[in-house]
Amino acid sequence: MADDRRGSAGPSKGRGSSRGDKSGRRSMYRRRKVCKFCADKIDYIDYKDVRMLTPFIPERAKILPRRISGTCATHQRKLQTAIKRARLLALIPYLTD
Amino acid sequence: MSQARQYELVYIVSPDATEQDVADLHEQVASTIARLQGELMKTENWGRRKLAYRIGKHREGTYVLEVFTGTGELTKELDRRLKVFDRVIRHLIVRVDEELRVAERTRARRQVDSDRRAARRPESARDRSADGADDSDGGDADAEVDNG
Image (tube, rainbow over all chains, first blue to last red; front, side, top):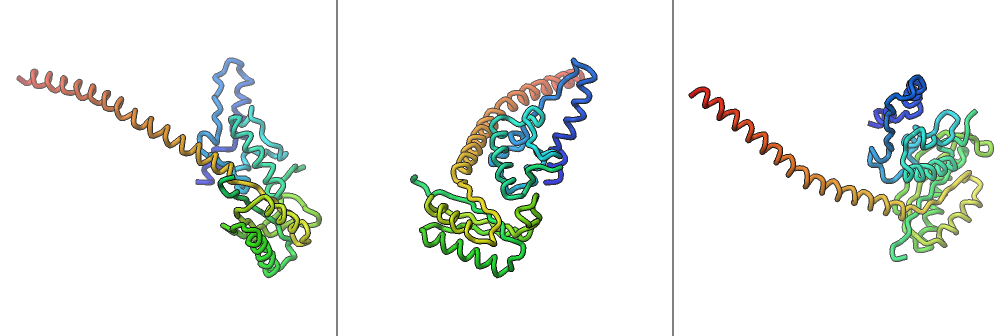
């Protein structure tokens, strides 16, 4: 199940390709982004659960912005604190180069 | 104030520490919690993990999670003690009861919502199926008439 979720939650990859399509035609149908946490009914974003956080930390290890991931404001805020806590504990990196 | 505050403490022990050191450290933490009228609820040893970045000269460490209830004074004391130990290369104390309560509340609300929706849905479904049944009955009646 976890693998499955990770596959579906690769926002950086899936959305990247869709954005490519959009630039081709302006008036293309834009796929509505849905907050992953609302969809999966996750109420508490745990800073200890690295697997839950990884889809939201792309290569440079910055926090993926809402405009790309589609996360709702409430969950983005919670995600932000979770990622920052995980960073402090060296579970995920501050930056990678 | 009415309910006890719940905290999570995660600390990373230096990789050169032995199993015994880790156990001793846990014992220290547990006794501190007990001394200040806290209650240790759960302990998890995640074992040795690779760090995402270097802390000092370390590249890996042993993670230990402790969940406990207690007062702010207790967290202050724990914080002070953990800072003193050389073997602890990093620690974090987070208060979790409020967030967990919020999560619990949203889950309850969602449950109520879905129950209500479920209560509403069978009615409309029944209406539709009743219509369908009427139609099929009519069809049957027609067929019978044809047969007749």
